[in-house]
Amino acid sequence: MVKPVVIVVGADKGGVGKTTVSRTLLDYFSVNNVQTRAFDTESPRGTLKRFYPEITEIVDMTTTADQMKIFDTLNSGLSVTVIDARAGLLSSALASLRDIGFLDSARSGQITFAVFHILGSSIASLDEIAETATFMSGAKYYLVKNFINDTQFFQWDQATYNSYFHRIKHATELTIPKLNEMAYEQVEVASIPFIDFVANKGRNDEPANNSFVLRGYVRHWLANVWSEFDRINLTELAGAKSATRAGEK
Image (cartoon, rainbow, N blue to C red; front, side, top):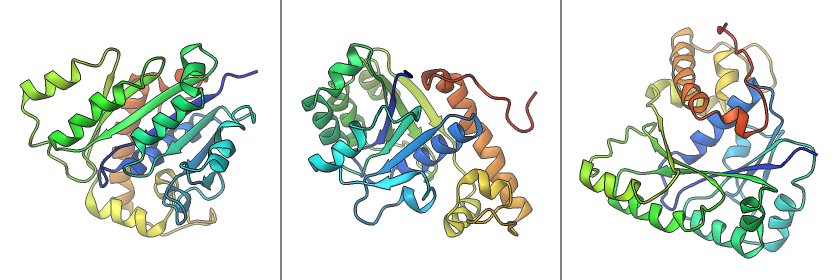
């Protein structure tokens, strides 16, 4: 039996681009032939599901019934479960995982567990690290600086930055670069995965008429994001071998 892999993407602050990071993860696993399912906790409307309707289910992670939908089905045969945690839900979600014994299972090696903690530019975002880190024993902890919203991390002088990051053993830093604003907006309007926009496909896999220039910006940006995922051996974390992607040798 394949060991389940659970990835939680979240933050305790809104507007930091966590769903964008979830979308890049789903695209990355898709091109690397890793079977993946996703849960969108922006209940009841959903955000992630708009881009990946076939593999995403909207849940309310604060309810026991929906927690069962996620964690009682980890042995469903799919390699990876991605949970896009609603803004402000990360700490409480991790507390729930502790209470149901999930974190103990991760520590004992029964489950591979990773958290992508999306950071904002403020000191308050750094304060989240200390709280979240208390749950990270047995987990892969990724601290993600996301520039997708033109974040400058202006409050992070080096001494303050180091004082927070050096507290966390085994945490890995990732950087998500900024995507051209017009390109980002056009993908949002199309409501399709980034890889489909680049491939000039529509919502139903039909040929589209996306801008050549904007597709180029998305392709270049996505390659940079995926190079970060390659750097942390994300496919190995998911129990898969890296695939040769289009344009690579």
